[in-house]
Image (cartoon, rainbow, N blue to C red; front, top):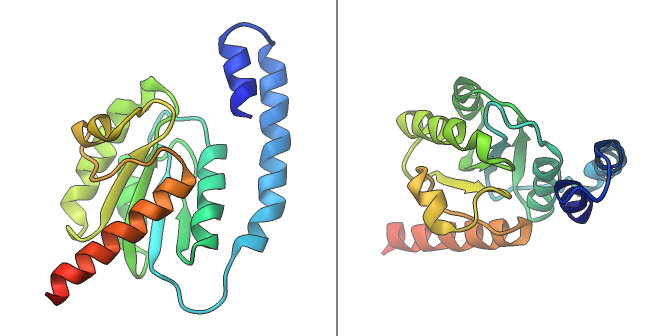
Length: 174
């Protein structure tokens, strides 16, 4: 799907092809999602979403599945989530360990920053806030918009979250 999006941005294919591919991928992810749930005790809960104005939800859904497979409970808010909805969500989940905000387009960076600022007022500092997506190229950009961490992809998200939580656990114990 990434290569199809890149082809559309370069003007090599029509937007209907990109939308059709996204629709197919969304249906496949929806069918596979139920298989990603794990039974038993979780490592904690992660809230994910795209900030207000961000219309791309497929990447968030795929990230949610990878995080679930890694032993976390996931609360997926989807795309176009207002800051106050992120705040309401984190107030209504148990065992919150992280929040992930996904920016696919540059147009959603300001609303991502707003969502993170709103979250900071309501969550414990032990909760890790991630900012990632196609418009967030590196850790420096993520931190400049208020996040603790950045992940280049789903695997990196899980590895970084596991590492940060382990480090924080050691600091509390030591």
